Image 1: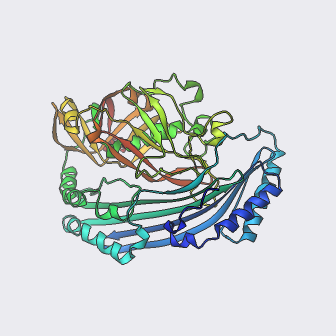
Image 2: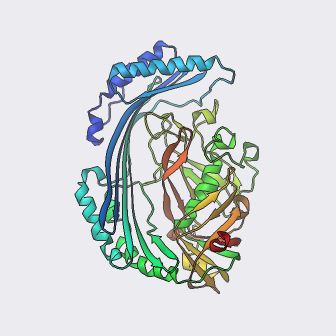
Image 3: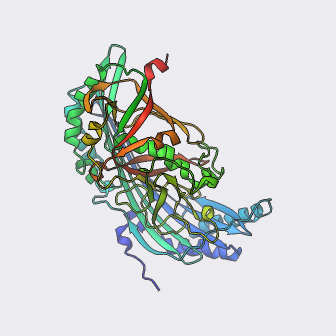
Length: 498
């Protein structure tokens, strides 16, 4: 028998939960109803959010939620129920409700649920962070944000500082014998500068991405002092820069912008539930349908997209997913061709292996197929960003993400950014403004002309990717190098808004 992991490594509140009693209450009740599959998940989330405006605290939120979800298959149909009451009696009640719901659903027309086989898993996963943010007093956090943003506040008309921290702790057990404990941290500090202009205001934010780290990220692992010192100058230059002349340009896109294009045009497009049309209510389906697998030329031969749930500090990195599938990595696009999807056990089906993409953002929500870390691979011998820029005669260099728009099949899109620099004869010649680039997914990625080397690679991402109905939020990372895309349509957003 595998020994129980050292639970003292988990959040102190979670350690007090009687997990064994919850497991026994749920699974014994599910077995009594003849469930062919049953899993109980205890899910705790700690969340802290701070917002300072002009060095004054406007918002300070510190909250903790915990609950128990029971998911079953009875007579070939799914059932699910949840509660915020962790007592064995309440857990038995929701287990019974889940089984009763499944039995009723089994009477409805439709195919029976079939899951990919999965070996039993037992163990613990603690993500790669050094300092638990929730061990740091809020007053200390506020003081640190003030100290870091004070020079910025003194240089612009208005400023803000925001910090979001999450610690997610879960326990999963199923009838087959799986028992896994997991704890993941993620953190995102962000600073914004605002200047007043003749026609309103302009703003610019730091480009540091959210990450699977703890408090240590707020004070290190990013050159905060350098970026904050450069932000006022970059913003003032932008506010005084000329408006872009619309047309077609070669684009050199920095990872702080490209990660979002990957997320929307590749990450969401290759979720298999979307590709099959099952996920349609929240942001639509996908053009990348299963009949195209193995033949669709998604991008140029330089395009290699890897999915994983293993990258250190990745926000979708786990030990196991919420169905007990071990973390792994796989190809989605290889040499420009679509070769893989993101799968949970139902999407994989019998005779195939899930690649571990089931996740629920709380105990009250059922696990659904969610995005792993999805990343564009660098050229092992590729140039640095300056080298990429040097190869462009007439173009734009794009840094930082801002707004975006993409259609309901993840095909036609438009993206803006934080800063846009004109490139002429391989040199940066100053910022321009009012820029958006527009394309469809296949045209854009087929125009991938050059990729930077590993020295240009950065792991970006989002804390708040939405999917499902009722809606769920997941954090996900996307790594990529700087890259060049040729002959892309560029709009003037000011003119388009008239």
